[in-house]
Image (cartoon, rainbow, N blue to C red; front, side, top):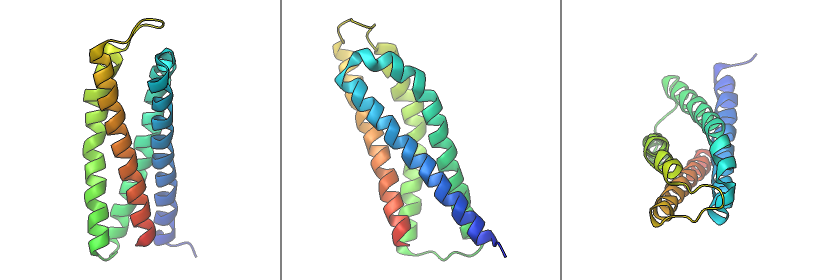
Length: 147
């Protein structure tokens, strides 16, 4: 018989795969655009769908995790640390999407044009926060494996 625990496990793993995979793809494409600003138009075309997959995956993982807690999954120090990190990622996402990416897009040079100092600064900040959020995703994944 198929249990709710098993269903939540499948949803959690699928969510983690979508979330971590999308975050990784996003960072890898950002590295490519960091090295070659002529890649930026392609970045701007794909960032919204990738972010959508990332959010969908993270939502699935979070909701299934909440489901486990409602079913009586016990709290441990490691789980509490994981929940804190999940909260930080949930707070970091809107900052990336509503603060850094719009500025990054607004200051991006036209194809073939020279990058401004302001763009280079926001590019570095955007890259750093994207890498930070993605590393948190991987840390959360490792903690989940250890639970």
